[in-house]
Length: 39
Image (cartoon, rainbow, N blue to C red; front, side, top):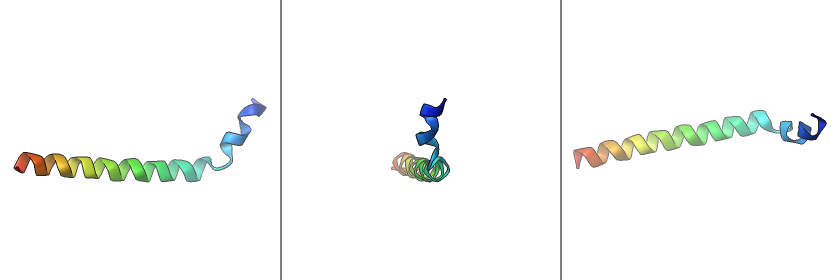
């Protein structure tokens, strides 16, 4: 399992960043879908 260690260095920060990006994209998608529906 030692060969997996390098991937653990920045994991927490990367996960938080990815989570924020996905959360933001989710909000944008919902916003555009709502705007399209109101047309």
